[in-house]
Structures are given as C-alpha cells and as structure tokens.
Length: 456
Image (tube, rainbow, N blue to C red; front, side, top):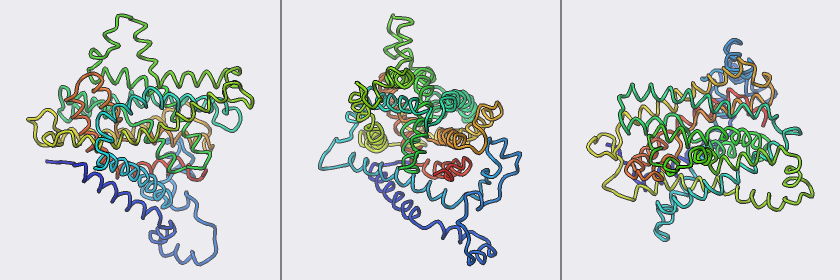
C-alpha cells in the first residue's frame, strides 16, 4: 500500500530541493578531483586550462557518435558525464522542486484555505488554456520567425520540431500499446496508462528546466522557440488523438455538435494552436511583423500587452501542477492513493505505475534517440558541430525525458469523468514523485550528448 499525503509531499519537496540545491552549490572541481585518476590529480598541480566537457570522459567511437547525430568530440559515454553538467541538471531539478514546494505550501495554507483547491486549479487551468498559453505561443513564435534571418535559428531548423513531435508521438503510441499489453492492463486502466506513456509534459517543464539552465543566455530564447514549434504539432494531437486514446471523444462537446467539418476545425484550432498559428502569420508577413514588432509599429503596444499576459504562463502552470499533485490529496482521505487494493476503481495498481515509468523513462528516451538518428540519417539535421544542431538535439531529447502531461486530469474532468480524473490525479502524484531521479539523470544525459553546455 502506498499513500502520499499533502504534508509529506511538501516536506519531501523541500528536503529534496535543499539537498539538490546544496549539491548544485558545490564547486564542480571537487567532483572532478574526487573522480579523477591519481595521474590526473598529480597533473593538476601544473597550470592548465579548465577541463572541457569532452575532456572529462573518453569519447564514443566515431560510428556511435555519427549514429546519434553528434560529432565524435561531443559524444560521450553515459558513465563519464561531466560533473558540471550533472550539477546543472541538479540545480534545475532543485529549482523545480523549490517552486513546487512553494505552490504546495499555498495549497496547504491554513491562513488562506482553499487557495489552491480543485476549483481554483480548474479556473487557473482555463485561464492557461484560453489566455496565457495562446499569448505565450503567439509572442514566442512571432518573435522567433521575425528574428530567424538575423541572430535566431533558421526556419528550416525550427520546422524540424513539429516533425520530431509527430515521430515521437507515433513511436510513443506504439511503445504504449506494447508496454500496456505486456503489463496486462485492460479497459479504462489501459487507456489512462497509454496516454500517460504517449504524451509527456511538453510545455511547462521543458521551459522551466531551460530557464533554470540557460537564464540570461541566448540559448534560452532558442530553446523556447524550439519548444514552441514542438507544441505546434503536439498540442492539437494531444487534444484530438489523445482524447480518442482515452475513449472520451464521444463525451466531448465538439463531438456532439452537428457542424461536421466546422466542428472538427474548431476542435483542431484550439486556443493554443490558434495562438501559435497567428504568431506564425504575424512573424512571417512583413506588414504584420512591422506593425507588431517594428520600431514604430502601430500595434507594438498590443504586442507588449499580449507578451505580458504570456509571461504568466509558466508561473500559472507551476501553480496548477503543485495544486494538482498536492492540493487534490485533501479532497477525500477515504480515496487515498493505494496501489494494491483492486476493489476500489479509483485506486492505483503497482503494475500501472511500473509500466508507465518504464515507458516514460526508458522507452521514451530511446525513442528520442531514434528520432535524432532518423533526422540525422535523412540529412535534415543541421551540420555536425553547429550551434543549431546542439540546440535541436537538446530540445528533442529533453522532450523525451519528461513525465506525463498533467492536463489529462483537465481533459477527463471536462468530459465529466470525475472518477477517472481522480485516479489520474493520484497516478500523476505518484509518477511525478518517482520521476525526480530519472528525470535528473536523463536531463544530464541530454545536456552531455548534445554538448549544449559548451555554447553557454
């Protein structure tokens, strides 16, 4: 039996954040000296340049590096990850846990009860879906397109991200079918597990980690652009194919409309997709680009107002995540998360948790590597050793490392399936608690293999 209470989650998040923060603050040279051979320690007494990322571990064979789409100099073995890369990953995880801890404290506050209860999270989710995320995508995509010819990533490179999203969704769907079948899952349990295996937290978490790793660097803008273009494919697919995967399309309002093609188009062009599409137009068409982002553009104040709303996307998403993972535990103590008891339909089973963890943190990263291999083999990736290749490689790999999407709870709630939504909230609580270590390790691997830290 496994039970995760809100108070325990708060203390665990605070303790983990403090530990990771302490580790991240230790000079990386201590770790380098601690794990260096004696000869390296003797040599350190002689003045020399600081070790580069690729100098701390032997490179992979050239064939393996080429297969991964990386330059031999930057492709390193998993066992020889640079201490500085690992510390950067730990620091990013510590920042996430600290933020979640603050959100959890707000959810458990006695002075302001119900501050982050289910109703508050539901209202905030609607604001994110209808206002904050569309505003963020509009400004991000428009600014990226407008700067692509100057100091940004080329459009050809950015268009690889929707393609990568499509490949990862197809591969993830195949993996989810195999993993759920091997675990013996059936019915709604299998459908819920499959969407967790197929669709990851593709927006908030990658952006949070990128901000923690590259704040103040041009890399942050480039990775944000990559994530925004990734969402161009991921978002409509999640809200259409994902809903079909859950078996809830017939319960949705769009499915009950008699508009036919109009209803399908309305379903596809959800607010986030519409925001991204309008950003694509605003950044591509010279008239709109000059109006929104020109020095004396008539619509510059409007663009600034939309950008201000977009800055609320990440903080609001973090609050919803914290409220969903912690605040939801107070709704009913009698429905506390349990993994063994199969009599209660809202309780969790060990095989479900293990199968999702296996799919998300083992199969999905392998799918990310396969995506990079495929794009590299077809010659679509930028040149080996280029800045664009490192950024795109890191963006694809970090997407493959994330835990399941938390908006599935919102999806089930909107379709009136409260019992399944409650079970999904408990499933995500357990999965996010157990994902701290594998996500940190996989993030270190993504930083290491992409060699992006050398560009910072």
